[in-house]
Amino acid sequence: MPLTRNRFYLYLSLACAVGYGWLGLVSRLKPGEVGEKYEVCLVRHFLHFPCPSCGSTRSVLALLQGDLAGGFYWNPLGIVIFSILLATPIWMAYDLVFKKDTLYHFFRLFEETLRRKWVAIPAILLILLNWAWNIVKDV
Amino acid sequence: MDAQHVDMFLFSNSKYLEESQMYHIRERLLTLDESHWRMLQYMPFHDPVIILIISLITGPLAVDRFMLGDIGLGVAKLITCGGLGIWVLVDWIMIMNITRRKNTEKLMMAIY
Image (cartoon, rainbow over all chains, first blue to last red; front, side, top):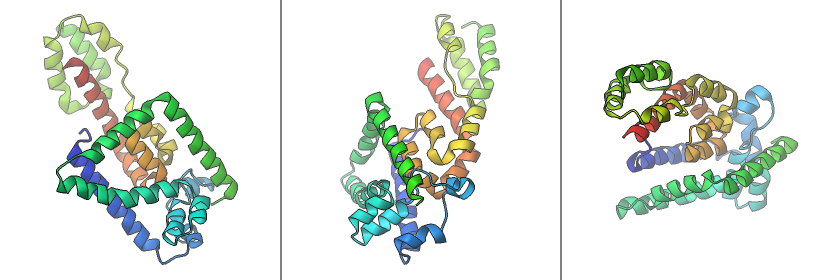
């Protein structure tokens, strides 16, 4: 089944619900304690080193406490996730109320842009750099 | 297209395609002219077994999703530690069917 508009909004709502649920679960912890208490990353679990997105939850928690430097330190991808979690419900509500599909079109445009080599190669390099930094920090 | 060519194509590519769509694909291929034969022979399909192996090895990095062209979902899977590990497990079960579906969609796009 192709990712139609309605299916996209359904999946996105579920993803946001899981994201906020996850944040609710770990929100009582300090950012540094999350990795010790909940280990969801299969790479870290089996290979004993972090994946490119390890530390994202800690980053989002740090950002929620207003610690921008901490958010960047734990994982810069956390800033992206924080922005998505913040903007998506508002954007989805706007589309649903005004019966538009701007978010869906933005997603399609994002996919098309990332398919271009001159965007994809720097993006992959950034992810690899971030991964290397994660391994050095051992988050 | 010649029925022998159609059956040969379906026989050699059945593992890449959705079984439920085989009848429709065959019916459609029979209505096409022979000029499509060469295009069909070189149609690049993803092998579901290869994608499953890639998913098993590099699931949390979402390489399987990127290979199938799901760029947006791939990014989402990558930046969330493979959907908190759950998406990785679900993909291990689903990815072969997803690959067959993607292959079938690609073929449908080419012949319709």
